[in-house]
Length: 418
Image (cartoon, rainbow, N blue to C red; front, side, top):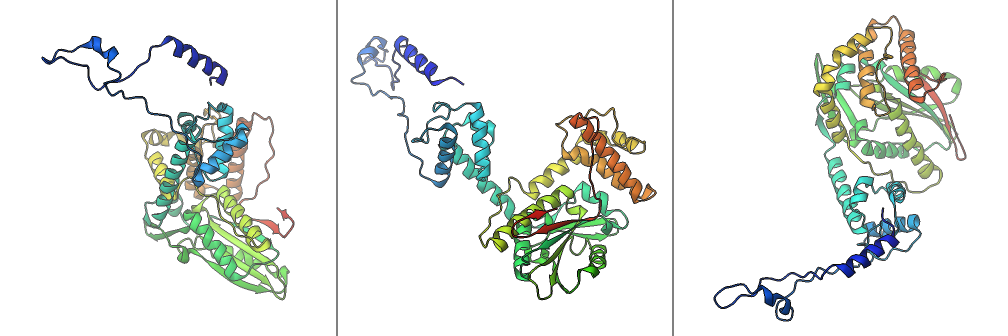
């Protein structure tokens, strides 16, 4: 980036060396139509000159412009008076751009650094943020109704005993919200995360998927109990009865009699997402619980940067890509070998979750061939540890893991314990 001092020198030097340039409508002509170019230099008074458009100057006025201006001021430590002045003319550089992008993201204004570099004015950034917000909202409005099956869904739903692929999480809540409050929190979450409203209809080899409405998806049961010692068999029973065709995400609230605390069992079928996904869901739940139930304040989830429809289109496009199809034989051969994730595979930090799902998908397809669940856990753990070791360049790593089990989480007014 050119610093302001050098820029001023350039402007001064070129201004002293270059002639004035002006644009005229036409060159003067004689009565017979011949052009009189020599008269152009004397024609400034009688010929309309199109002067270059005066640079606009305007203070930030809209909410978006004011938000962006405050971010600029905090990063550049200078006041902002004009929405048309370049960020770089105000002293900004590439590092300052990245700092601005981070702060804008925290305000739910999702602008890429690439766009910032090419459109470095508040006016342009505000216009971009407004368009992006409208596009995402419009995309979310259609996230209901029938949907094309995802490749990952097919790999699970065609297997036997599909309901065993589930996660569960047990929370101790103090204070325990009312059943109506819990239902409202769940409605808010599944309205935000539309993938949690997936429903499946399985008829032989035919699978039909649709995204249900919010009211249809809010599955909560209420249980009252006296002694905690007898609850573990109840938890296990509920987890065994999770039915993917009825409600892949289900909450069971256990209220302690004559007390204001209780337990919440969250059950989640793997077809809705992996452990990372349920982790994000639980983070949002805990944030809402603390804000609404404990602190009695309003809560608004962060605006999403994409939708289920957009993400599904990307995954389906990837699954049927020629390059992906060409890799199938390689991965099948790999899954039949002792080395699930091969040492010769050229891993890099650019490998994304969809590349990893290819491996995970074939493991799920071969689960019936394994001797028992312990063998599956061993193979998965060996593959994950070897991959992480390569990425981190560490000689040894220690993994703490729990597969298909409940993590005890205690939530109270002052602490969060795992």
